[in-house]
Length: 281
Image (cartoon, rainbow, N blue to C red; front, side, top):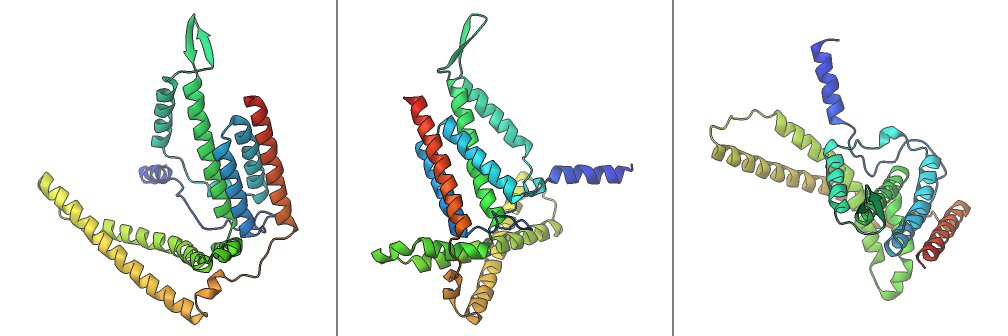
């Protein structure tokens, strides 16, 4: 193996897999076929349950539910982003710091009592965070961006009785979700072009700081120009297709699979909440 190929492999391993959001994984599955509103309701229900009952039992029940959904959706391992090493270091430091707080339960090591309460609380919060991230990633990997706006408009229909602009909110959300991946690609191109530009080598630390400030200003100005241009193009495309009302209009409604998914979520959440309450009493 040559030196060049080794360096290429090191750079590839160092780069890792990036975070890809709002892009469905190719293929089909029962999770892909669910209505977007059902997924939003499930995410809201699980988040609310874990906010009021953040115990190990409810976390275990919801984790099993999310893992089963990921297995049914056939999410490949390559779709997951690489975890940087500094994150493991931060988690280790956080765990050590939390362990110093002590608390029950207590264990005896050579006659010395050590409290594991702080460490267990840290592990619970970390597990809860990973669970919510996995739930959000599942929705992102199995839902088309164009289905989010109409689903929000349908779910927010009761709020129209209060004269709230539900359709306008749905349109704004749909535009934001559609523009987000496009702007990320544009910003990546701008950053790559900035790196390819020839740079003058600064002679002092003051010139180095000034050069960094000028690069940030140029990058922000270019990003604003690209954003305005993309917004103008998107406005023309929306006008040509019939206006913003098309963004919140979708004839899809819940089906039998959606009601079964909601029922399974309610049963799992109720069982976890009941067992958690019994253990705490």
